[in-house]
Image 1 (cartoon, rainbow, N blue to C red):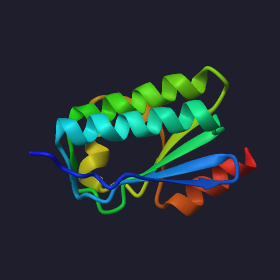
Image 2 (cartoon, rainbow, N blue to C red):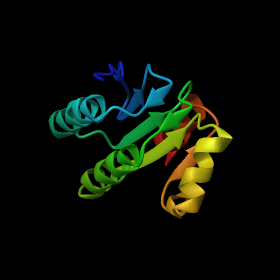
Image 3 (cartoon, one colour):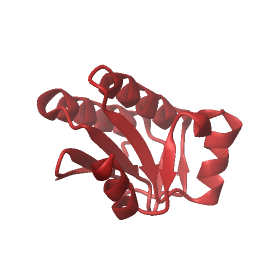
Amino acid sequence: MDENLNTQIKTEGEAAVITFGSSAITDMEGITAACEQIKTFIEENHPMAVVFDFGGVEFFTSEVLGLLLEVRARLKEYEGRVVVSTLSPQLYRVFKVTNLDKIFEFFPDSQSALKTVSTD
């Protein structure tokens, strides 16, 4: 099944906010397309921070965690950072179980995440 994730990338100063227009991020083709879109954006723009806003997302596969780790590795090359916002308690448990809660920062919404990455 080809799922359109409706991935949106919006620039806010030196940061980028990435949102998904799908409540379930499960389709490999959609995830691969979103991954390529995000990697291209990062290569062309070199944002100092990327905020992944999961507002409205109820479920995602482990490939999404791989995407976050890959983006984190790319930004780490030039001291950029990746933060996560608007994550449901259910999805936060996925980060906790995998111990990824220790390497990502979490914010209740994208505006508070942007405020923090902009002032640091």
